Image (cartoon, rainbow, N blue to C red; front, side, top):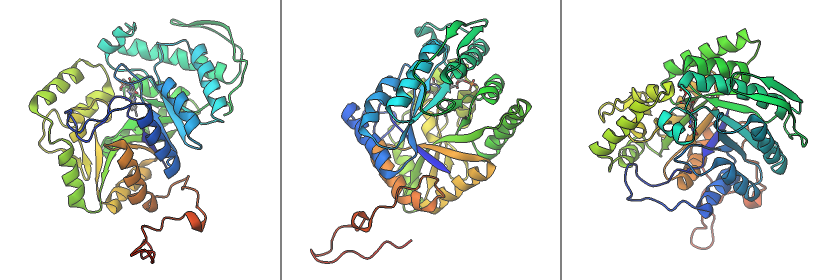
Length: 378
Ligand code: FMN
C-alpha cells in the first residue's frame, strides 16, 4: 500500500464554503506542506490542474528542490499542450528530480472551463485526442523517434534528446470514469484512479478496467482519491466532519450544484449523485462521508472515523485491488501530521518512513525537566 498527500493549489482553509478560517496560500505555505509530506514519509503528493489551480508544473518544479524523496504527481490535460512538449517537460523534471515524477492524465470535464482554455471538443472527442496524445507521449518519452498522423495530432520525427531517468518513462496515472475513459486508461496507463466512491462501485470500476486492460494484454494498478477525517475517537471525527461544513449555506450548495450540472464528466456526475445537493444522509457507506462534495468539485468524499476504523476501511478498498491512496484533509499542513501520527502505524505502507536512529526518535516533551514521558503504546 502507498499513501500520497495533496498540495492545495486552489485555496486552503479550516472550513469549506467560507472565507472564515481561510489561509494565505503562497510558496512558503506550499513548501511547508511539501516538506511535511517529504519528512513524514508519504510516497508523494498530487498537484491538480485546471483554471482554479496554480500551475502544477511550475509549482512542482519549485518545490522539488526543497524536498528529498517524495514524488510529485503532476496533473496534465491533453489537448492544451503538444505531447512532444509535454514529454520534454516530463523528462526535464524527471532528470532534475532524480526520477521523482509521476504524471496524472486528466482530460477535463467542464466544457465551459475548457473553452476558456481554447479547447472546444465534445467529451468523447477530447478522449479520442487523449488517446492520440498518450500514444505519442509514450513513444517520445521512451526516447523513440516518433511519426504519428491521427485525427487530431500530426507529429513528424518527434524525439527526446535528454532521456528520462525512469524507464521506459515516468509512470502514467489517470483519472476518468466514463466508458471511453476506461478504454483509454486500459490501453495506455499504469495506474487507474477513481474518486472515493463506495466499495461496491469501486469494485465494479476495477473489474471493468481490468477486463479492458486484459483485452489489450496489459495490467494496471488501481488508486483512490479521498479526503480523510481521522481523530482519536469516532465521535471526535464526526464532530470534525460536521464542523468542516458548519458555514456551508444553501446558496453555496445551490451554486455548486449548478456548476456540476453543466459538466459533462461522468466522474463528477457520480460524485454529485452521492449527495444530490442535500445535507441529509451524507454517510453514504459506513464511514464514507459525502459532505465535502456539497461545495467541492471532484474528490467529494472523506473517510471519517477513529484510526483503527479508517485503517480498516482502507484495507477493505485494498482487498478490492486498490494499492494507492491519495488523501487530503483541511488544513493540509496539520492534517498531514495527524494522518502520519494516527494512520501510518496502522497501515502496511510500502515506503514506511525510514527508521531514524534512536537519537532522533520521537520522545515527546520531557516531563518536569528531567524524565522522558512513557513510551508510546502501540
Ligand atoms: N480534472 C481536472 O481537470 N483537473 C484535475 O486535476 C483532475 N484531477 C483528477 C484526479 C482524479 C483522482 C480523478 C479521478 C479525476 C480527476 N480529474 C481532474 C477529472 C478528469 O479530468 C476526468 O477526465 C473528468 O472527470 C472527465 O472524465 P469522465 O467523464 O471520464 O469522468
